[in-house]
Length: 206
View 1 (cartoon, rainbow, N blue to C red):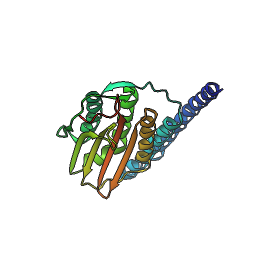
View 2 (view 1 turned 30 degrees about the vertical axis):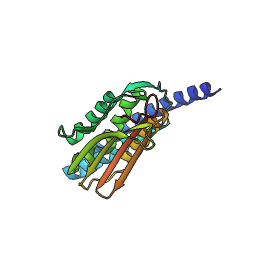
View 3 (view 1 turned 90 degrees about the vertical axis):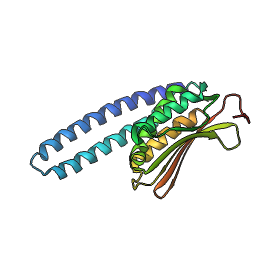
View 4 (view 1 turned 135 degrees about the vertical axis):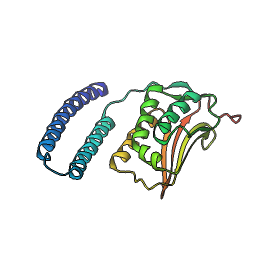
């Protein structure tokens, strides 16, 4: 019964997403025509707002869409490299890995990659504007998980509505893999922590 319900929901979501895409296209066209004589600053504000709405709607569809994950042992070093590449895309190549990304964790490489893309989209501006960004891998609390952590300090970039939805979607994907996502914000500083279960459980030698 659950499979039938999911199938119906997926079809409805596809139709709704297509309809919303058409509506947004018409709004963008109308805005371009209506704002043809407006000053550049006003046009930019309208197009920025439409772009933010479009990103938010995409994330909301992503959040409620059925997701399948295939959790299996995955090299921790590859997971760290995948997450680090997203951080470097926004914060620069100077960000380097600190800590030991040895052994294997449990996860779905495709779902993890998508999670990290969502984190980059959600926190990219925070990382870009920060005065310092670091990335490290360490034991999770309890010793039977591995924590991949991005810490940013300085900067004044707020985390907006679309970013919070992006964090929620990323968190949902990570939870489906048995992991956890934490965003700890403290003024101009913030830490994004992804904790994944280690293959084989506790390893005090890591």
